[in-house]
Length: 546
Image (cartoon, rainbow, N blue to C red; front, side, top):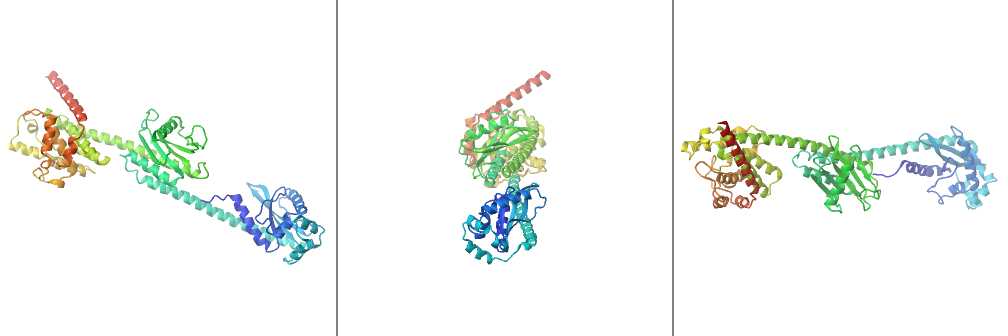
């Protein structure tokens, strides 16, 4: 983007006009309202310019003319010295006259002027040589001045209009460039706003996009989940070379969150107290929720000659912070909906598990073990979540199994076993109309398939069994063997793990079994104790009621 300002634009136009008017034997000067001339690129390079602009006689005459022009609404051409006419062109800024463009027209009468020799002496020019040069210029007399003044002023106005048009074009181009940068940034950010279940990734992408668009060494975003009460932010993302430890960044940003006003950004100069230090200019844009500051988006160490925060910098930071706020709002709604959805599923599965006191909490335990296994296998957060849901509802089809079969003491006969074997397909039918549940349905339908193909309901084998179903199969078998039944007591954990290892490659996926055996089962033990206590409380309540 161009850094040329409007006054410089005006001087460039004057230089261009100087070249054109010089061909007609006219010198164009710029001076303030006191007659002090401004620097020109023609200084020392043009004898006629020197004759006019370096002569004390001429400059004193110009100052006197400016004094008179200042009192005139429409300044008129004036003969400064005999044979040298000044055509004034007022220059205004904000409707105030601040300078003049002065067309200096030497006429034929100047050769007979008593001031001619003094002018040559002041400009350090040989008078005889100057006379010969002046005689070769296009001839003009004092009677031509008014006509030439009209032409000079018209040329000036045309040049100013052209210069103004160039400035408008440049401004529009700059604004288009800034708009493109903003649109490109917002497009890149918006593209990732659908991943509401992963705030860290969204914040990282946003910081990286800002780092690419802004001339700053690093960009940091931090968000506190509960406003200014938590000691450590819930989410932190860093892009670029921060030259500092992450803990320093978090402490600095957290301090700003505590003190920031919600209605304006914080800007620190390189040496401002309270800034990041080490000559590091910083922009800090508050991130809001319900009008309260819950985080900070920061950019620092500007990699440019001008260390001040520009309007473009501020605009992009503000736009990015606004999109972060929208994302966090959506993420919060998603989290609430997801919690409500999972709560509904847990209530449904708990009601099914409650039909049989020996399977109390079974679905939650299978869901937790399946989730742990998926995490240990390096699955992404989305797949881990889907495996958890599938584990939670894997036995929902038992709602269609007669209760007498589910709670029957002792072993089941062939007909009753057939009822039990129907529950994967019944569960699939119950859940199949739920949108975006395809991967969960695979776990529900196939969690009783066996690696060797002898399982049900479809006799799938090996990798044809969906991976989510293979994970649930191991977790389901583990909890089933650990739990007591009417016809047997629960097995010791060492026995269960040994049985899983023995069945690896026949019943279970041989790659998943070693991963499962290496899990930490302490959380599982806590959940078993919770469910046991709940069941005992239920038994006590039923006893008192009886």
